[in-house]
Length: 179
Ligand SMILES: [Zn+2]
Image (cartoon, rainbow, N blue to C red; front, top):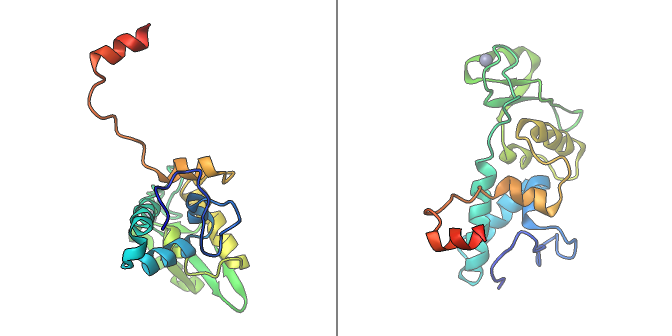
């Protein structure tokens, strides 16, 4: 059973074992695998600590904020959905430009596209390693401001909520700091 996780620690089991990738890096490159693993371990008492970690990780993945540069293609408001046209046979067409707010979801019907929520769960609908998955991930990278280079540290910083400053620093510590 894995002990406490750190941002540096690579996956020690599963298909990424031995790759030196951390769970944070996997979350931002192959999110479907993390969602799948979280669901698999959720009720397994032998994996309780890992399950808790993955539960937190999945929550952070689902809570990634939209980039401030993302705009509805029609009205410029923050978008909620991305349009993905095509199918598994001919391939898909997806781009950060084809995104829409809730009020403008009907305008893409003519293009025979499907609307997906903007988020990592959408990438999980496409097979990891396929061209389509790559395209969806590249689009999400822009829409969710994912790190340009997916280092262990960048992935961790993207997914771990900034620590909230606890109480005010005790005065004796401030004295120590000013020395
Ligand atoms: Zn709109």
